[in-house]
Length: 168
Image (cartoon, rainbow, N blue to C red):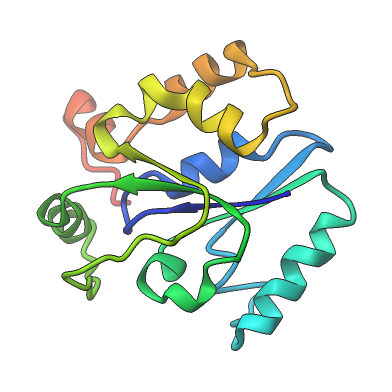
């Protein structure tokens, strides 16, 4: 089964990709539509081929990305979709703090697939819901979730705590 996590930049898609990559059961790319082996995927068919290839090894294959949200042609027909909703102004401010920028469309049309939406600030409270939606036959590993939530540390918060600029 294929799933996609859709969210704008700085919406914890990379963290969710790590969380949902689970041993031999599930592999979740982060921005799989944008890169594979240090080269850009150019077509929808290349993207589909990548996911089909990984589907031979893993029961569940996913991609957590921003490209499919911005360019609907990369939405996989029949994929289960989790949409992370984050306020556009928050996204832009978060990017700006990192010295980054993104062109974010004003209007988002969600896919017609089977999907759920999760507010950005409610991700931690909905981890089990996200897990069981994307990986329905794999028991939810509560200990893994607790451990990984603790590891979601932002560098700027460490710098504030230490009173020191790490230069990252």
